[in-house]
Length: 261
Image (cartoon, rainbow, N blue to C red; front, side, top):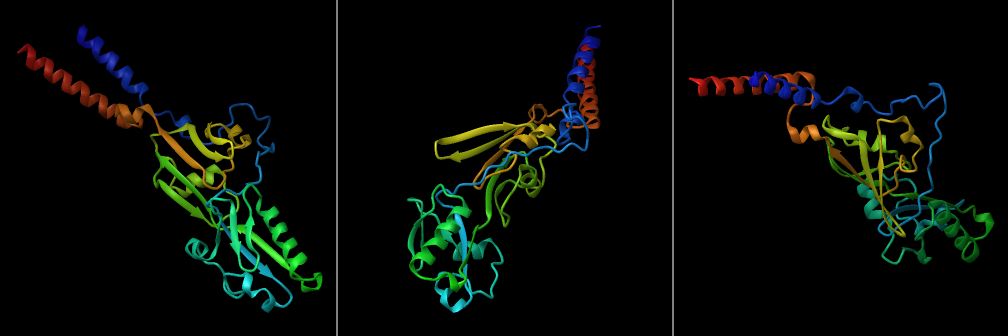
């Protein structure tokens, strides 16, 4: 009788320890959406530059020879990858400045890329060129950099040549969350002027797309926590759990028979 009770408790524990399928599905509608075609508003704020950010700046004009000195890359050569951007871009230093030819130091800390573009265009037109020169400035981040760690297939620091990136795209680029990763408590750690922000987002809920953290900012750190099932080691699927249970029961029965004899 005691053996039966022990076996029952063991079976219940092992069965509840497998990972439910609902915890593996992204952006589920838990009944909060009125219909499937409803548009979900996404909270996204323009990114403001920080120290160590990398900028790609190009200056164009009707006569390109007039602005060659401002361009680190020849007009007929495209930037191909993050390595080229790193060596030929402009890094925001510890004082929040970038250093350009002729213009020297320009403070960009806390500005958006659009505001930096306007600042450079204004200086060029005020100090060096006339409207007839057709000055056109383009400013972009030299790659979207973020770090992802924890229960993902390919953890590490990633650099993507995109201007916007949401957390789903970032996770996909890291090979997706493992089966034992906690999709309900994904942590995003973000450096802000006032300090470090830590936010938790539930990626199994469709309302995650309304979060101001759904769209990442450069230099964000993403941490995927492990589920308790990984620590227990009882199996992540029903079949694995049954196999573990049968093994445990067989071992227990063998031990009891040996003890009785």
